[in-house]
Length: 427
Image 1 (cartoon, rainbow, N blue to C red):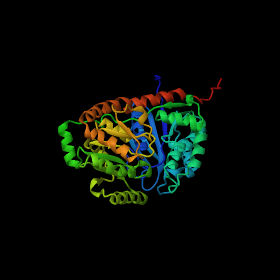
Image 2: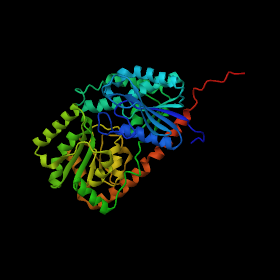
Image 3: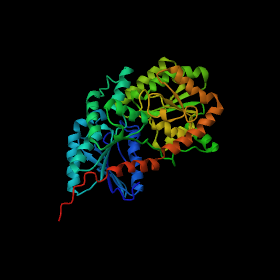
């Protein structure tokens, strides 16, 4: 990495409830928000000045000052109400105008724009062009990939994901920004194939974890955690936002097959639901469970407080990521780091990076018997459980620690710093 300091960095993440301590589980508030804030904190530790720009709505304050080098700066646009991420780009022009006015009013200077998700990417490209600074974009997910996965499974029509608009804007964005940071090798390949972009325009850097927070614990402490949370060593834990792509219905379909092999197993399902649409989805899944006679076999946890997240991972016998579509799968990495055997979806960006049977297990969540068999393996075989517990945690810490991820990201920024500097014509 270059010796010189990057200076000032503008990070843009528009949708959801972005904050120093984000309220995970709220609408559109999940792994991406964690990703952005953890990176921002590491950039600040490394000495960079960082402004995380997001949308101001409801009763949120204009600014969260995290430390001397880092703040969350909320720019008002689009009114006071929540706007879902699929519709955010309808308002990006107002965001761009308000950001540029504030930057120029306060005489602020930035060296690089780092945008996250396509809504922020479209806005970030315009801001970078106006300020004549580089723009590095992280897609997090790809419209072409999500559209293909959802449509192949008969999902998404009712949700109005506006895939055609999204893909067209992504196509232009990827050609306009200075560089793309993909979060998996699968994303790199899809960007090359579906968006016809040269591989030289893309760098793969995976998301990270807080390696001090997500760790295994001693047997005595683990037993106390299990008693406190009411989660046992034969329980399967799933956590995430209430969304159709998360595959909660798929793991409910797999549960009867698992119960034939593990009669005492339960599904502990923590689906964060904060909107009327979210609660409607949860009621649908609960009705599905009742229809299959699974009422006693599922513990509906709802939203899990951030301070309890690591303990929930630790307490379970197996962690499952059953998503029908998942650009990466950070919850799985966090569970692995906590020493919990993990079963990943084949329909996500993480599984090509793991060694099957050593770091984690992989199965297709749309095949209930297959997924149930994978869940059963670490519950049935102690030697496999012990191997996944140790090797999974080692892999997660070494491959996905946030400080190392931040340094790799800074190296990309440094490659483009000063690209649009105006020549000195004085004298």
